[in-house]
Length: 370
Image 1 (cartoon, rainbow, N blue to C red):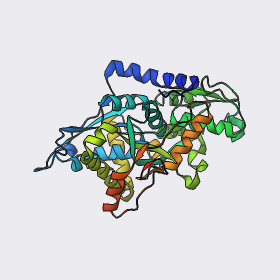
Image 2 (tube, rainbow, N blue to C red):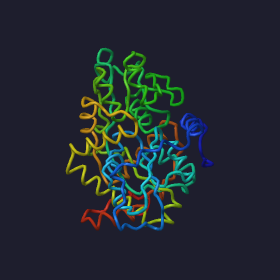
Image 3 (cartoon, rainbow, N blue to C red):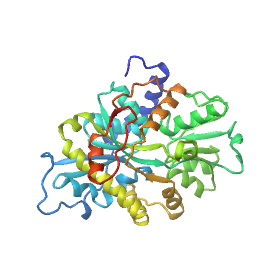
């Protein structure tokens, strides 16, 4: 951890990491996704990339990780990797995926901005690089309409976020501060009570009335709406052009240095997947849901899937300027010492892929190689 880390940061990171690390001790780094389906078959005559037997890819079972879900389900990653096997692991929280990346249990991962920032700063810039974007949007404040009718009514209520210091937690704490209200970042107590609740249990907590609302990503937001909740605020409305990074692609620096061709293959597959999603939104939605079912054993019902899918935009652009703003929000909330994010991006390979596809290059906003 950096020498200039504050006690608040250390406590936040410890709490944020504790539960995922307990899970890791019990079952290893993440859950293995089923990659034995026909869409993972290696084409005849295909060759291994960089001499690798496999490339290990991590992602969350969230629709905000649509690129990874669809790319897995439709075989885009396997196609580009040739005879090098695409292996998958799914995660429930950022800290556990960062641990897996650091341990070499995965090579490349789809992950949110806050754990990307934390992983980079804790390692003093040595553990990872952000090599591409994946998604924007898909985060909403959903409330009980009987208890909360306007934004002002949020004061005095209990609002859930997924985890202390996670991307949505930071965004909600920043929004509270912008209203002129106060809330202690560590305890969650204040003018609004911030309740840290795993996305898996938040719908039940909402249904029971133990929370009055939640600032959460999809599909949790739409699950709350299906339970009678109302969308009071879409986080996209708070950002210029309605865009902000919700999912990045990261890689271990060791793997990037040693296997650039494999990284290029995965990024090419990501770009192809995003292009296919945009051209085939209904088929893509079905493919993402099928992969969610494969990974978790349960597909999303239409009343959750349809509105959730509409609120997410896949993108190759990492929206680097918004990552820097999100880091500033974490500093403002007292959850992060001012970080040095210089060099967190390496978009060289992505821009090579985009150029070959006839697309415009994307920017690192002064935070890396563009």
